[in-house]
Length: 103
Picture 1 (cartoon, rainbow, N blue to C red):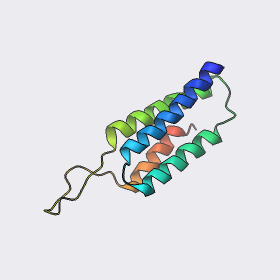
Picture 2: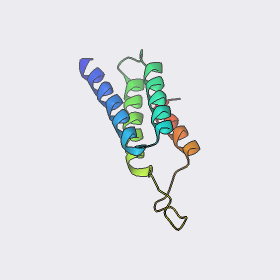
Picture 3: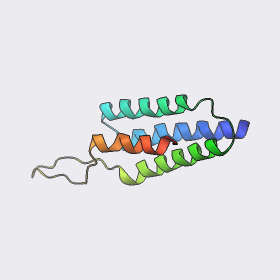
């Protein structure tokens, strides 16, 4: 059980670190994503070892990968265009929720 706990804590820290990279400079998204991550982990605090825990661990790994691959910051350039594609804030948090919740 100690190794499962360690893996879950490592994933928790990984999600928090990844969100810092994804939302650097955006205090609103940093706060909202940290709250959501903490709330999701707290809501599953009493899940024991087994299939449900395995699903949650898989979803957390997928959330880290999703954030690393799909969330891009963009800046408005002098021509009035964005240099990179932006994912709207309203579309990011539901994806995190999808990956962290098990139905």
